[in-house]
Image 1 (cartoon, each protein chain N blue to C red):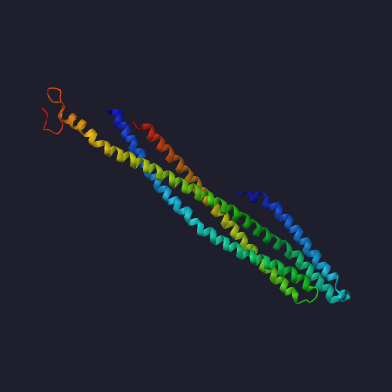
Image 2 (tube, chains in turn red, yellow):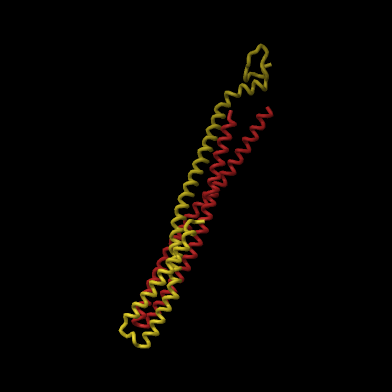
Length: 131
Length: 141
């Protein structure tokens, strides 16, 4: 009789742990879902910075080439140089943002994997206890 | 740590060297190809062009390196996101299955309960005299 009571108590503990894990799972799932728009925003930002950087590089090259013909073109080259610099700076910020997002994502994924493993362990433990 | 971080630095250095060289060669070629090379103004202008090319090219190459890094990281991030979503979906399915199993077991217990009820009543009321178990008929004693 005492042994049965102990089993019941353990089952209740397992139920509570499962409920807690399920709550954590829902929160994590929401967090992972929320990363989608952030990734989309970074994609747009990288595209914009790619256009700025590429345009800056081209403008610099053409500006330098034209500067040999007309000195005024050096202004174009310098503008292209500035444009490329700011594009690169934006790309560096994007890359840092991506790395941060990747860290968060991988951490969430590992936690989610841990929750799944524990849930399966609880399930098998319950089955083991089942009469 | 992302794999591109390890291989990114040599790639960027190579790009800086290549682009700097290319810009300097291009600027020199255009400058030397000018008919007014002998004039003093052209010489100064050529020097300015080469100077700007030499200073600007490494920074632009660095910008392109950052762009390449961002694009590469973005691809990896997208891949990781798909994996995380798959893990999330799989975990949700596991939770759902376990909860369904539990619900089924609980319902099964409820269905079994009427069958076990006489046993409980019997334990409560005790076995009647004569050895016949009568359930639901008074105290049975």
